[in-house]
Image (tube, rainbow, N blue to C red; front, side):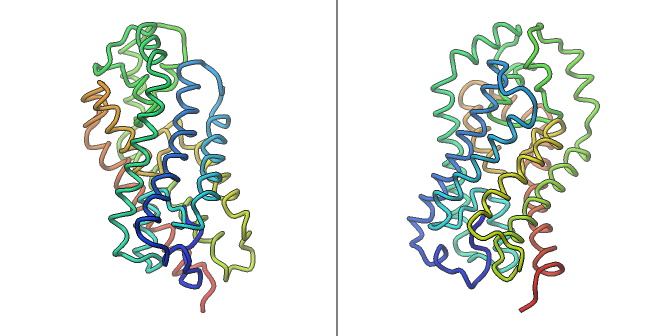
Length: 290
């Protein structure tokens, strides 16, 4: 996400790189702590029933992160957004690597903090469902950190013992190409909205409430796309917690994942390409000309 996507607003870009990267790490930490925290609550306690309840927590977390760090770093808090802005000359290329590293670090740290809070409940959920962490079926707890397609939530939220055959039938319903399309389209819409609502040349830009519209966009997208892919739209949000989950015992379920090529194409390539296309659509076709 970004509160500065045009050269006229240069304050965040001119801030010191160390300060900006610290802000990006903090902003991404807030995003993942609240967002993945909501997933923990839904999976482990059966609260926050429905996609909208979880989605709006993600939306609020984005709003808060942007308001907290937007004036410092621009609050990209998403490698796909950073790369898209740099692609269309809206952000200095020389800062991209540092921003990406900070975003990944913030997401990893948030996952570690969440695990320190919820780990007894994760173990209890695995015991109730009859799954072994790191083995097939443990996606139902790993989904609190990393993402899978289709969303294994229906198998995590019931009180029944995990049924591998039913889960496989569920997995077969969503192809890698379908999941790629969902993530590509969702991130393209998100990037389009981000650039549009933060463009001061746009006569309908909402100014200081732009983060609210960005957060609501994410909540709406989650409500539609989360059943398919868990609605990532953000490589740091997936890969930071995914790396932590690997180290915390989910092993191959986290990395490379049950569908290894999909981990790369759906949760890394699709968001990046989608963001580039969404931002480019506004910059080259829809946005005001100067």
